[in-house]
Length: 493
Ligand SMILES: [Zn+2]
Image 1 (cartoon, rainbow, N blue to C red):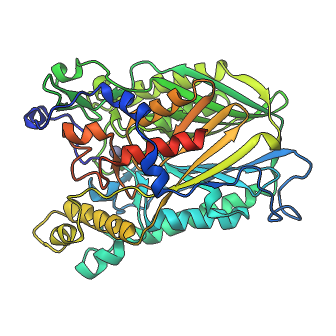
Image 2: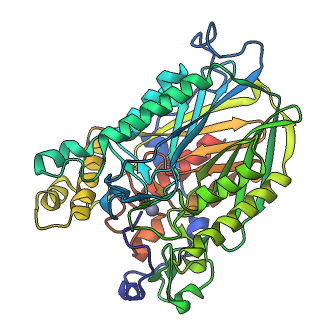
Image 3: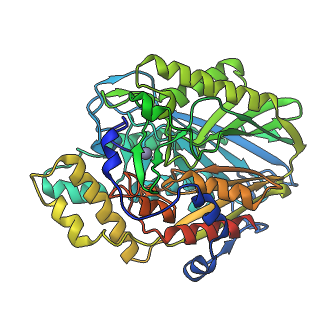
């Protein structure tokens, strides 16, 4: 996330160290796996069988696969803080926000996938959401993946943050806990009801298509290897917009579930910040939400869940000047890509035995400048802006989580020839490209913006290049690249 959605030509002055942008993806693909091997314990649950949910529950017997789909409203009430207080609170609802998900019911305990039209959900917020959905589905939190789509005129939910803010007179100013918990209750109810009528799945359908003129890299690197411009979600400077798209993943991927010839549900994955304009207090699911609606209008029988890929350093800035009409243009282009992905779908039979779920907990190293003392200094300073104090509170929560030795679960869903990786934070697109390069034989999707406690997660080289994403907006150290690269390789092996 970032409070300033426009590109700032003055960022050209941020010049430190020598580095080359294009090398990042290559570096990722060849990094040593040793660090993660030391810090992570691999838990293989593929092929595991348990009694949980086998009898009397929604889980089908005999190798059949079923899915249940659920959707609930998660629009915040007027007055709620948005985007972790980086922007104005909610003053108007432009279009409603939804949580959408599906439960995969096979021979093992259910798997739950859920995408929220929220900026982020992190720390205690993420834990509570995962536990609640697991309980409702009759499974374990390890088998639940919750992701934000990352719209900015939307809530950012962290149930830990008020513990720090209430004693400082800032309770409810960053996260509206009561409305977020009410939203969770609605989602739990919808999930529970969905289990009463699961649908049989016989086939998986996989498709992908190029998206025209939406994603562009936010980080324009100068000839000295340092950040020259931050080209954010919108850009009014034609010279900055004219820079090439840079490193992106231009494809939208689509995974669909079918009962014979009847399509049931589709999940799409595309890596970009989803903002056209924001910050006016006008709650909206933005252009990705509009694109999803266009697809639902075209295929009303197909339940559609959209996940944001590793779009931490990707936005629409090259193609978006921030004027309201651009929202519809971007939506139309993304919907067009989704349509062509849908039309390209190739089906393969899918049975319960073709599903696998892998969990790999990883410990992401803390950024060295981020200390308890440094966070408290900002948090306790009443002269600091709310957004700075909120960021310090987020940093402090992350520092303390790491000090307790907490890990974050990366998970991988295998379905036939497809793999879906579930990743934390505002992850750079290089991770997604590196994952695809590791398994060129497979159909690979990545959902990022899981637990956003770490905030931005750059590549190692990006921390030396400077720029917004790898400054105080990132809670992790450059060595995170090695941990994640190795973990992704393990999950895909
Ligand atoms: Zn962001």
